[in-house]
Length: 494
Image (tube, rainbow, N blue to C red; front, side, top):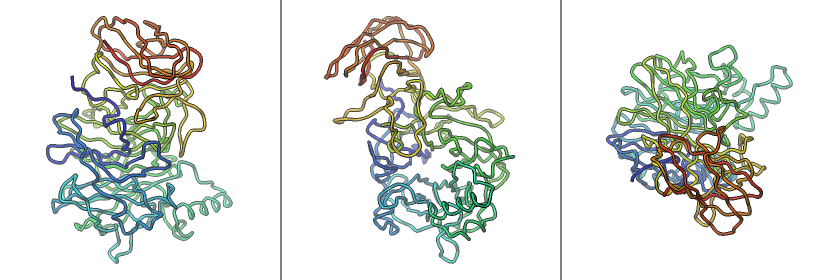
């Protein structure tokens, strides 16, 4: 039986910052490209996957569409391409917007420019087109040229971009002076470029482009504040951080972004493309923080940055986002959930699941890889900033071309939402490691077990199982109780 789960791409693939777009009868996912077990963000060239709009179970690898070596701004230090977006121009061609990053082969560097590549087809071989520029040919470096999002609004091309520190700038003169120095170094700007910007350099911005797709046609306008300017606005507590994305639904503009909290994708709405945006709410959090009142301390996964957007596919709306693996911020995977846009235009936060684009609960039959979890927690999961966690936490990892969950110790909970159970079956877990104990089998994180699967130490993968008897839709929750550490490859219903 054909099914799909989160991540909806192969487990060996790491495409964060996903921008889904329907072109013709297919949906394409454009994003950054992390390396498995990578040392920094976005180390690989852009690749694309696509699926028929009528069959989101059938994702096809389209191949490499663009390499950083094609960009003349690549000087051997700026070698990585951060989050892109793609739009269809008025000439019928497809334009890829991105920013080179990396400082001496490390992540970072936010000084721009935003560059553009072009192709006749949505998943063909893109070619460098130019840098976003003012009419005199000067590259646009005002504000922070980062994370472009683009829309063709009935023939009008608009570019959204920006970034903001998720800290408040000190009010005292000494503190402000220190922060200006920090920003000068981070963003490679002069003091004058920073202090003379009327609204500050940090926040989300929009500018209109000419039909050549690179030349600025209008003034640059601030649409959503960063944390430092959010007090007293609807954005307080959910100020703009990064990940600009724009959609138009009927007569309303939806600006999707990652907030100062980093783990969530939020949205703001306006009847205008360049002003009057009002905070709408959180769409998804990679740790389910905020969903049904969940607090940050109770996050159900390790969290980190988040980036994605929403798209209507064959009449249904979905949010695309990413999760973190390898106890790192550098190996992120694409995920998606179905959402509902209400009659009043609001979007309620959705919980993260294992079934994602499947359109129905997974069938409790056959074998499943363990990394399709929607819950992975030891009760004290961390927020990953930039880099690798220094503490040993449960996570997905890889070794010898295998992907599995590691660092499973006493109390760790692994959950899969949702399965459709159909009576009596045997549940087998494929396990290895030095641990000795049991896996409690539950249908609720805080519920009583419906069975226990004993496991014993072993260096080779070995299956352990018990009979279960369930009917209906439930989460599958596994909680390890025992000594030592175990690793978990897969589970099977027979």
